[in-house]
Length: 372
Image (tube, rainbow, N blue to C red; front, side, top):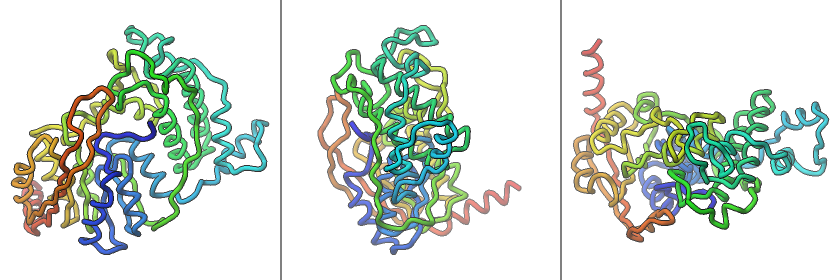
């Protein structure tokens, strides 16, 4: 399965980059405001832009950090010291990264949180019937890896980016064996063949082109962070529907956070309301966009939207025009579908380019001044 994400823009990245390069010269600062899988952030880095990547999902920030901050594997020197200190075997002829992936693949399985809450042999704390997100063996292996990585983090044997790389690798690996249709909103009633294969942790391949310095990754709500961000252009790829990412990818968020939240309901959802996105609301989306347009220190906004969005192209165009001059491009692309979903094969993607009027920033400053 690899990395699948609702609304991921990897297949149309060239269209988006084409627009950006016409608006901002290479070397400028671009905000990828809802970075998701980091596909656009990586393409921007490869084109020598400075990237500020933002997302409310912890998993998205870890994944994007790996894509834009690393051009080669980190050394994992703290891990080697940890292994020597604990008299554990180190492979002398490979890198620290290869050593740690080898170690993850050879950990003894344990019956922990994932086995209890997300496998058919477990006993969920809330009393629901056992869940089938992972086979019992794979869930035990995930528990062992999570416990080991958290131990390394607690004992300061990992740098910040090394920890993000391991989170990234665990997420990529569990995606390959998860018994789901496409998202983690619910599991399948019967195990598919892929989900019964033993989980394997693999080395990530790194992109060594582009600019390696000057990038930032920020975890939080886009509209709440807007006033602290300055850029030449802000690219916004908001959710198009009512489906909340935090609910649909709750298990990956648990991997990213390294915690053991109460698994609620038959789907075993974590409490995700602190990550609720106003962009999934037909009403709240307007205020969220306006806050970004008014408060961010940026005059050019490139916004992705879709024919499957909460609002039509015409409605969004009329709204954006309140803040400046707007143009729109549209093109077709293949639609993301879950395994059992019946829907159209293609959708129309829209790229709105908003060049904000200077007075909208002034209006905001006047409002703030009057409130003092």
